[in-house]
Image (cartoon, rainbow, N blue to C red; front, top):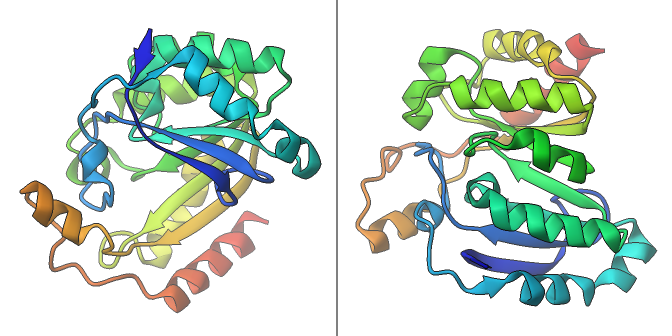
Length: 236
């Protein structure tokens, strides 16, 4: 069995604790207006066997041990290639590797099978209302909600990521509603606010894909930080 992997980052520092190997699997059901990796929407050519990927990850095992690191499966959406992901994670758990899953929670099911093998879930919040979610992603929240139900049942540690976008969710009202929304997700250890940027604009142009945010201004880092401070104050 092979999987379609877009790229592998050997020494990631922001996608989970410690030094990490970050595996970007291609394919995604969502079409987020703020996406900066449209080249990963389609599942690409199958280019890695389980053996090849596991061997590549295990080369960095000494670094994982020294820095409490591990592997993070990201994308795209790794849950779309669930059969391959299950096989790789089963092998890595036997090697004592810490496994993180960076996901939108929109896969093809079998969440109750994969989550027991995952140590940390990094969950991307697209929007907190049905209307806002559909407008930003082109999908309903049904699959996301199924994933959250499984996540809560398995009691996994969770990090939350929220992209803050000008004139979409960059306001106190949204932040306060986000705080209420997150109460339905258990075991949240960390919440990150990420300011929207337009570094993917050239990719849309090269791929010939319509970019709905071509005129969107970047998010002010200072304003993003102010909103985050407000969030922390009301959360505590």
